[in-house]
Image: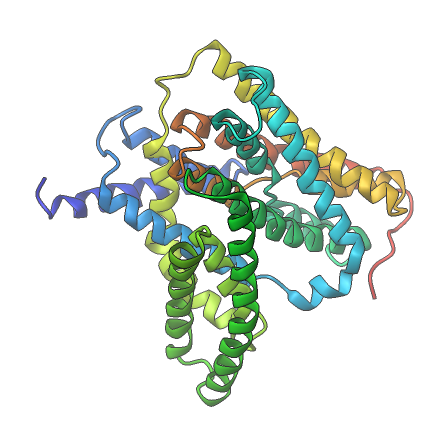
Length: 396
């Protein structure tokens, strides 16, 4: 294949990703859904204009690294610490219940798998996909209703942040245990060593960036250095600790999230992500998705996957909220607010496929989950708040 044909591939991907992203937004769905559909249409599944090449795969990998770096940058550590143990407990339940229910669902379809077997790790990974939470749509609804600063709103946002942190840690362990030459004890040691290194090294890096930020505020050298740090930590995580590179990128974002220029860094980094790397990543998922193995069993699995994933979040987060002395109405709102899935679920699924824990046809279930949760959550949240008789207390 001629080297210059990559330019045509990029032109087609970027154009169709944007067009379908706009159409998705018009239909009140996340733009990423439209970008994935664009990949499906121009890829082998429908038109066959573009196939997954090594170049697109590498560009998509850069895209996922930048996306996770941005998620880390957007984390509010002060708010995270202020909300305390309640948000942490809700997040833990929001990870544990979907993890168990997802694994049981997979085993229900494909048989109970013994501990340590290939199918066991696939079942656990299916649950890991369900642990991801994306509350961007919920936040938009809460803002529209004037409830973003409410007790429920603050709890949802804080629990979602902690949820993603725990989910990434779970992903790290699952991929680590799956490696054929790994030992459970060594996986734990390497994971702990990575986070110790991240805390110690992160503190030093943060102090360096703090000095740079004060001396050269709002200059482009800051986001360039930040992006270099992100790639370096991603490389170190994968190369020396056997940790998923996205974990390194996420931690890099968290290290820098308290800089006064963190929003400036995020805005500059987002330009390249929004313009090229993000669309290639999401369209690339569509290019990799195949319907060759879709049969009656797979269709039934996809439907059950969506139902279980939605119910698991409502049950896990809702019941824990109730145990933390929220009333039934607020507990239900928290559970429903945590239902939405988005970029993180796709990122987790993509990493699972790269590790051999997921085949391309299962992306259909993940895409369907994102679409259904993105449509249902705003509708249910608005309905629940319309039933309120008294105004909700807000956080001071």
